[in-house]
Length: 324
Image (cartoon, rainbow, N blue to C red; front, side):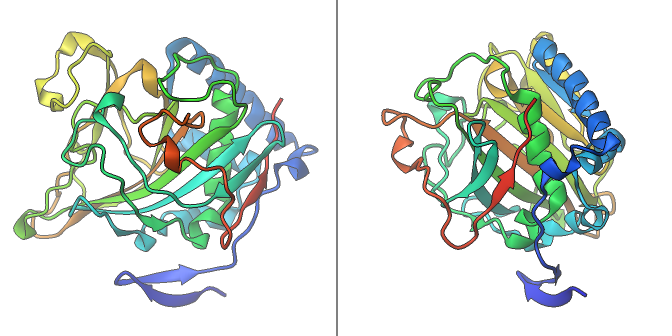
């Protein structure tokens, strides 16, 4: 039985972590149904440079990769473990770095490092260029097989997809750096808290492939947090309502558990509208996983000096990976 413990003002249910071993699924017919579905999505990704998958489609795909039945309920509450964002008062976050290594066919946890995005990477905000540290991804999240299956799903979708190279990244490396955020955005107008999933307006995230996954929400109005993808000609830093409609290349809306968007980050800029309260007397919240994947940074990159490949010493992960 899980036990209850206080964390950041929440009652949090703790349980033993599990490691998904996708290699054990190779003799299960559901695994191959999942692989076939992922390959269909990958084909669409190759052409459109983005896919949006409804949660009802994601659930059987993740189960086929080995996600445990009970972990689907636990992952809905994982955002209770998030901690304060150092530069935004309406958001709480946990953050972890991982290496996706096709050569060893594994995903491993890397040591924590400051996180920095810059104007040069099409990220224009008050904290652009500021190294930020967040609470680290807890074992309850890392040990959730739904989260692990999502990382495998993304790796299968983007592996071998050619992208326009970003300055300062090492495209000769076979490895990928995967940064995973669990972000809870809050809105409570009476308390002066206005939740903006993308306060920076139109932006990019300095990655090659970005994945965003809806986990849950409370008291959130149905028209909240719509994601728009814009042509790279759109002006960085302007709000969604100020954008040129002719430069919009896609519109998606995460509304249901495990609704998932994957897109080539350097092929688009994107923006997300605000989080609104349904009942204005009660706070609203929106819980997401946001997963950035890119090649390792070269020394000349503005934050290349902190992009190490050293493994995490206290909360290790070695996740077997199957690639066709």
